[in-house]
Structure formats: C-alpha cells, structure tokens
Length: 248
Image: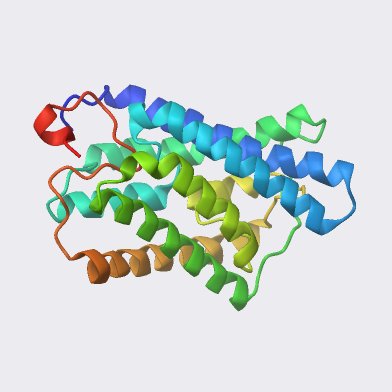
C-alpha cells in the first residue's frame, strides 16, 4: 500500500482502536446498568456512547490503519484488493486480525477493571436464537455495504459519521443489537456485564457475521458492479498516498 505507515504501526493502531471500542461498549454498559434499571435507558446510553466513541476512533486512527477495528472489514478490504482494488494483502491479514482480537479482549478486561468488576469473568448473557443470528447477518451485511459503497462513490471521507451512525441505528433496528464484529464478539465474552455475550453464543454470532460479510459483498457487486475502483480506501483514506491514488 503506497505511502502507508509501517505494518507494525498499523497493527498497533488496530489493537488500540479495537480495544478502545470494546472498552467504550462494555464500560458504558456497566455505567448504564448502574444508573438505571430501565433496559431501554441502558441500551440508549450504551448505543450513544458507542456512536460517539466509534466516530472519534475512526477520525483519529483512520489515517494510520484505515480504522478497520473489525475482522469482517479487514476481510472485505482484502477481498476488494483481490478483485483489483487497493487493500490489505496476506501480511496485513496476518497482522490485523490477531491485533483486533487481542485488542478486543484487552478492552473488555480494561473496562471491567475500571468499574471494579473481576478483570475476566465469562459472560452469562445467553444470546442463542435464530432471530438473533439473522440480526447479525443484517447488521454485518449493512456495515459492509455501507463501507464499500462509500468508497465506490468517492465518499469514504464521510465514514466516521456514516459508520458510527449506522452502528447506532443498528443497535435499535436489529434483534441482536448489532455486534457485527467477530473481534468485539469475542471480547465481550470476557465481561459478565450488560454488554456481555456467553462464550457458547460466540461461535454462532461469528458464523452469522461471516454470512453477513458474504451478503454484503454480494450486494456491493449488485449495486456498484464487480470491479473495485483503483484506489479504494477502507474504512477511511490512510497513508500518504500519491496524488494519482488519492484523487477523489
């Protein structure tokens, strides 16, 4: 990737960004549950904190790594690169995916510790039902369609607002409250709090998210064509690209 920061720095950005995102999700869930017994108020507080936190993290770290913070997004970008666009290769995959998963676990442990919870406590929040898996397919497909679609129409610079807004909306319009992220799903299993997910529920959620990835890629092909632009940025433009590659 021309002019991009060193891979180690990009992987570090993915670790920190994913960790911070999970800390926001888990921490705001703990705070909300402590302030109100109303589940609707708890979800509202949790979703608002996630919207603001995600938007800030994309703005801050997008120029370093592209602000994936999500294995699904990294895999979508890799698939785009295979079809002629610009994106991560096998080395980036090998660095980004472990960094995202490790960051997510670290973020959950950090949030638990900040609020006086056991640093690691397996969640007992069972999320095992077909309608929840469908919700994850819908949320993940929508996220992939949004991110790739923005790049296709030359509006990747709007990703901080658009992606955060979509995730905030999907908290409410999907039955699963929109995890849409395998790394975040794994991380949230480490916290037995409002935002947690029981370890036994993780694998079906991740499977549904991968189905959502495939559906999202298919929708992009149907709506925008099979061939990616020459310089597609995921999630936001990053690196000091040459003018010919950065022109939008």
